[in-house]
Amino acid sequence: MPETVTITDNRTGESAEIPIENGGISMNEIQKVIRGTWVVDPSFGGTASTESAITDLDGLNGILRYRGYPIEQLAEHSTFLEVCYLLLFGELPNQEQTDVWVHDVTFHTFIHENMRKRFMEGFHHDAHPMGMLMSAIAALSTFYPEAKDVFDPHNRYKQINRLISKGPTLAAMAYRASIGMPFVYPDNKLTYTENFLAMMWKIAEPTYRPDPVLAKALDVLLILHADHEQNCSTTTMRVVGSSHADPFSSAAAATAALYGPRHGGANEAVIHMLEDIGSYENIEPFVESVKNGEGRLMGFGHRVYKAYDPRARIVKEQADKVFEVTGKSPLLDIALKLEEIALNDEYFKSRNLYPNVDFYTGLIYQAMGFPMDMFTVLFTIGRMPGWLAHWQELLEQEQRISRPRQIYTGVGVRDYVPLADR
Image 1: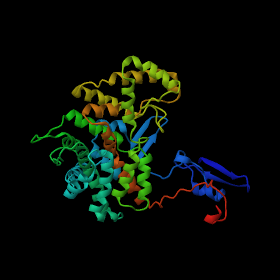
Image 2: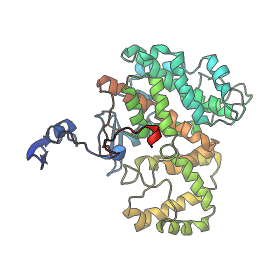
Image 3: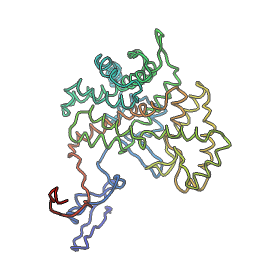
């Protein structure tokens, strides 16, 4: 028997039985009963703004799947570029498709010289890398004006490819510009993450080969960040994209959303928290202060997960491998003890405060040498394929331009008063 809900407007007595489909009910059907009345849902916490076939997120049970594939399997067996293809095109690529895709991404890594010489050099010497990256992504739309033809599949593929391939180049360029180091050109003999690490850290070596353990760890972290359903930045991508803006402009808007500390700054906040705790003996007093409402336990709990974030377990495994290469972070013991306490304390368990993906990522990035103002930049590189997959999906769905309604709470009608009489 189909599942339904019955909506009744007690003002008119009119009612309707509305089917529940895929866990949701249609606002169009509700509006037939309660005409001219809007559902108030600040932050859209109970509103499904779209239907999507990309990411399946079950927060109650701690499940995350890309196109049906469990995140655990993809992190163990796949690569970031393969996951990009999966998100964008719906299936894992065969060997021929993989070869073409990897080739196309690899050989679009270079950027126009004017971007480097005139655009990047125009920023102030201490500009934040994320602000530079956001601006550079937007600027790409002026280098590729054909990107505005969003309904040509071949053209769309080229722009998607450019954003995924040039993202690490722009990110490394922004970092090196922020510290006064010369730009390093891409090395197309390297893998995606090796190339990025080389552009970040190369000094004067004829060739630079990053440690394979670190390159693999970064690849896994990018997979974990590749998509996460309708988060703030992805929703921004879809809202801007619904106006049929080109993908560079839409991605710049999504990057701006991620730049906000409430979205992309969580792993940096974890590092600050661990540094503030400072030593092992300060952990329990800190935990008590959190329980007394005097502080926050950063990196625990999540807007949608009410169980252990499945990505957090994978990140913890990668942390162990990274620290074998880099040496153990002095903050690791504090982090491990905090996790142990939180997982066994009824106060945190009753509030579903389990470690999330951000709890260990900052420690990994820091151990690999990334400064904290690059953490959100790394997040941007990882999330780009998810943004683009949603942008492409909404175009294929022929989604109407986003236009939420509001409940007006301002002053009622009044007449204009001349300036002399006010």
